[in-house]
Length: 335
Image 1 (tube, rainbow, N blue to C red):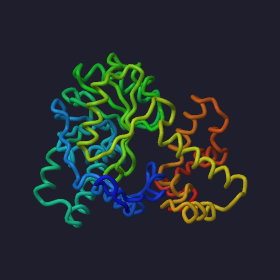
Image 2 (cartoon, helix red, strand yellow):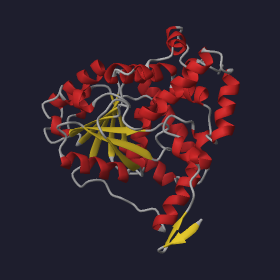
Image 3 (cartoon, rainbow, N blue to C red):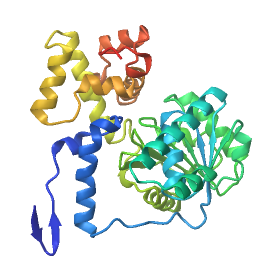
């Protein structure tokens, strides 16, 4: 800790810098506290940024872990009305249960009062058709990491939502320019890559497509900040910043396991204790989802054409076997 020019600087551990995405909350509490100290040291207090004036209601497409997390921070932190869409009734029910569980934990920790809990729940609405997003001012897509799926969603949103509505994708690797080409408003399409778990992780990567307007960019940054997030701008290249760095690291760990360089436990132990990250690469891959890791590596390999991004054969084999990690009960570890 040192003071220079009236500003206190606090050293940040490398583990904080490397925790790019998808870490479980338990593994991140200490890192989250470090980030809070950094913010408080530089500002004296956490600033409250209000959403853009013209954004009152947002839509979220996909009620999975990411979509539900985005809905939570939009309603809780930004105070916006949220329409959470999923075609699956089971997914919407699971999402609602997650929100209730999250609120209960926050209340037990003294972070949410009864009135705040009721206010947040009054802002969240589950919907079963995309048509019900037609009045949204801003829509965030959080569907599976598949270009065809995203193109179909954005094409439909483009015809359903009002012309001035901004359409954002939570994609972690796919070109925003390619997604925007499926709409009639590429100037209002942007990447808004949240990190998992969304209520915990501070970062949102913001990605402009080739045609994205500056007004769209500024609105997106303001919206992210109103959700309590810090933004980083990335060029529209495969993997952006976070996964351009993180996924090859994970893939190389899988390849090291494949080649017998070390066991699962020794590879993770080496990186945890040797580089002070909160979780080893193989356990991290399990929490992200091995199918997601493979999908991102395939985007990097296909779009960049460099053999260094070739997915490890072992990663492919695990996904073929249905071993997706924590969500399937088996990956590099048993759950």
